[in-house]
Image (cartoon, rainbow, N blue to C red; front, side):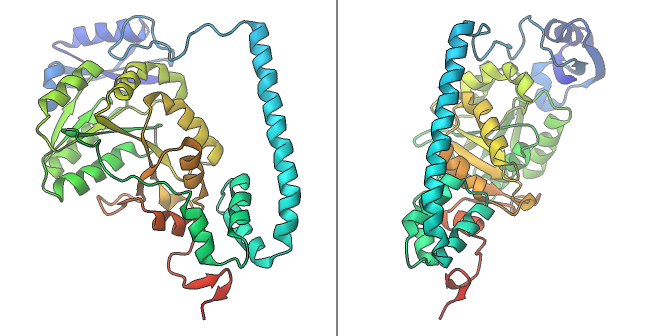
Length: 371
């Protein structure tokens, strides 16, 4: 079931828009007078529901395919699959060869064994763990390990793009990743506490109550708030608020089957060099799921990774895995619901402490107290 809000000057016009976009089977769920900040879109807000298949007619977010609908010919597709299978087998053979030689060396050194166990327990990729252990060498100290891991950590917690006015930051990511909460935390931390004028813009007319939730937060924080329906509306709003210091953009989080509906939004954000796009990912998600979701949102061309839900996991290797895999720095880390206390800029020291679970342990060797 897909839900979406439609704005128009009359309820009837809004329902007609819903039928054009979602099909004749679209059902009316709710109707009300539009909130003041959305009044420019229409006098009424109508919420409609339909099945998950988008209608073929034009929509505020046209559901044009992100990839050509027609796939390669069967022969080409088979050739591609065989090539991918061959590459997988080559990687597997390399991994087995490496593990055979590597494990022999690791097993002969108790300290290296402890390091390897710590990294794999943190769910660091096995290949990455092997490389780290090989570079640590003997004697295996905490300092040596942190130095090697530190070279792999990439951090960029600056908000906005250099020489861009206003500093425009967009958060994209899957449903349930905590985008809205992270956005409010950023607004409180870098807008209110720094006493700089900020503005919140939202393109999320899909999730019921999403706009109302943000509107309430914006009112509490005392920052501007505006609901938008199209990339063109976003472009106009950015121009209107160019004198603001910080503009935060909230986007819909849709399931993979509905990603086509964000094609125009993705094209707009990826083509605007002045917008700093952060991909929001839950740290509690498995590495395989993180990679899958990141691939889905690659069309937005995010420049940074923001990890949430750190309080819901005890293994933080996937944060480092994903940053290295995508070649993108980590910007912020978020845990809990407190605003803005539960969001902090990512640092190399913090990520290393999380991965190694050594927040305040003064030790020089694994399992050995400092002299």
